[in-house]
Image (cartoon, rainbow, N blue to C red; front, side, top):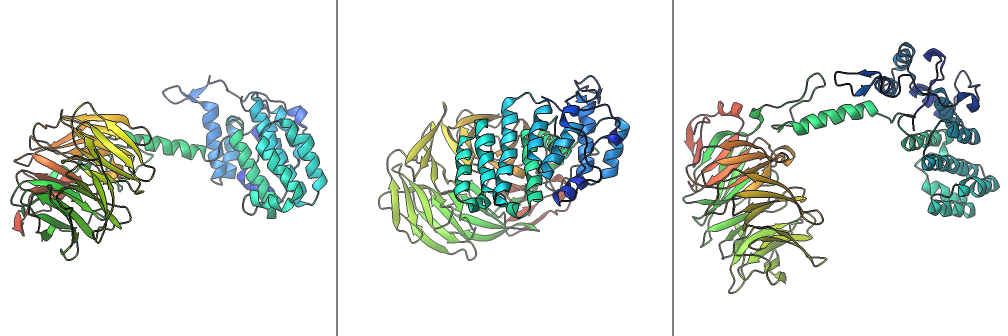
Length: 580
């Protein structure tokens, strides 16, 4: 399949510029009518077609294709004279004469001639020819109905459309319009029935999608190629982590390592024992931490850094996990086999305590609308509660473990929990369908991506596995390098478009990998004890938090910010200059 051309000078060829197409769509004819018949315009190869003449250093860009795409872009941008001059100077036509005739026939509603011309363009795929004919004749059918020529429409349907023997369901629909012509307006695009010329332009756009690009170059093809090149460069950039990083056509895109938060900007020192859980709020304005000291802390994030807002007391046992409400106005905290408490973020007040007689709770989470909470229990069941403490539902059996994370997907349908040492349960609570992620090693923790499509599983053998959980779970990538021998170590997604994976480690380092390549790009020193958990600010790709057995939380940022900090202590906070 391919486009056609001729040997006439470009100035003598019939050219349909975007301006001329607009004139046609408004009912204005071209100044010079086409006098050639389609029989005189049989397909001939475009100059240099076949890939013999190329441009560029790699020898992969065909000159004819390159020039035609530039011509198309010039006309689309409104540079009509420039497009015509390029055709004239290069001797390479944007469209062959026969394609120009075909386009004009469509816009003028010369349906019978356009079908004949279509067959002379040189297409080899029979289905493409039939599908194109179908759209042309369907337009003819509708215009007859618009003009009240019902019998002509019926004749077109019976003698021209039906014999194509394709799209039978559409043919049946068209037959119904004969009975009720007013139905035709409901199936056409907006305004289509009020302007034939406008509908014909729309038809031309649809035909362009069917015809080979060598015949009619797709709209905005050059823009698409350039955008594709920029996106590929961005995706291949190991350190791309900033919305402010402009991409230019003048140079290849490459970010420096300084886009990764690798400088320790603050040390938060308000806990008195090991810190086990850490999580930024959805809006990135708060950070919650919980500790073996039986307390949780709400930290506030502002332009000056991270400041202590509330210290939450009331648990009698260490707090293993925290969970933000969807609107970030409330926080759940879960004691180790104890109770779940719900707190008001603004006041620091405990709003409710959730407990079940004889059973401690081990995990907690929110429904996406904030109307219910979920909790894992020590008997391995999972319960759903109203905010006032009424238990609504309980999923009994092997649903969770005494040490497990708990996540609820954004649509509220799936509950995710570690149900066995080597398996994660994905429970569809509405369809009552269970799926599983099966591992060969013991799973110690997991984290769900923001789009709910991926899940990180931390394993006993010092690996982190990335799973795609759409449909049947599939292992996508593996991350290695961190240390884990005794403790629960947690990892997280983070950075711009969650392009990175961060994890704690028992060797006191924070590890950062590129999500797609699996390449380790940073190992950050600073803590003096095992790093138990990390959290990346969802609203700021340049802010990462880590919490450790050394009783501190470190806030990591960009290197160029460290110089702005001074060595001061205030309210349990140590601002540092980036040194460890």
